[in-house]
Length: 191
Length: 171
Image (cartoon, rainbow over all chains, first blue to last red; front, side, top):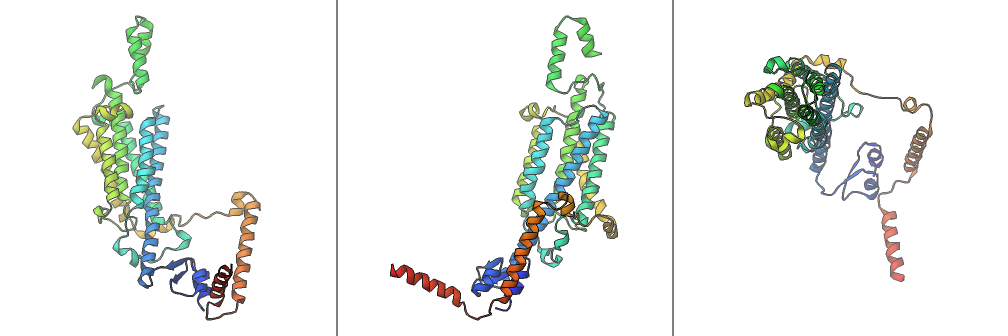
């Protein structure tokens, strides 16, 4: 009875299922099984949720920053996006839906109970996450810059940036231009 | 290669980008400051394995007519394709390298991002007033709970139940 106040003031108050009504009313969680070990199990899964959110946020931030910078870089130096709309949609599906499903279902690892409680002041965005986000995004951007700007030399590809065709619409236009007997149009398309 | 040069280059860009994210995905399984082995208990989560396979499958099918029309890609030679995978896997290496840096560097990174609610909303508004009101109600309730007489039996609860039974029985 004396712990009702303590239960009420705690962030998450626990009460036994067979406990007093007042204690149960004040508690956020009531343990259906009357074992004390259920408490440890609840804490384990609670910490696992925090870890899973960190996992997902880390991936999401990294992926978003590198996509944004890569596309921006493409528009600045190539005058077009290096990734087209469908590819960006697939990347978005990958990083929102699939990554959330995959990383949020990770079961707790054995060391989770020895790592100490989650501090409420820094619940998810701890410095370790920021370090990983900055470093991996930077790494991704560097690799993408190398592939975009040095890729032609690396893979022995040769094309004129303004002449090459990417989208099927441009392809069709060029075919039409070739089929037509207008020499001016042909030259415009192929110069 | 000839005329397909640009498309080939852009296919390589796409493949490299997705494989960078693919291996970073594996990186994100471990979020501790010194978790060097990102493959710890790799097969404990079958959803994760399934989704990794889906991503790898789509990237492979982007090389075949089945998906290349959709993703606007062309078939690469196996050498080019695997070089994209290798470039992507440097993401794993990057994660190990950053975990090797001294932990005191972490102190320079932001530990938390807190904002002043009043400032964010732009002065005292309806929402801040509502928050204050709810805080006041919570305080009142707490002080009321303190004043309650402490008894060792759940008399009120049982009494209410009995009353209810009696009431429904009499009807």
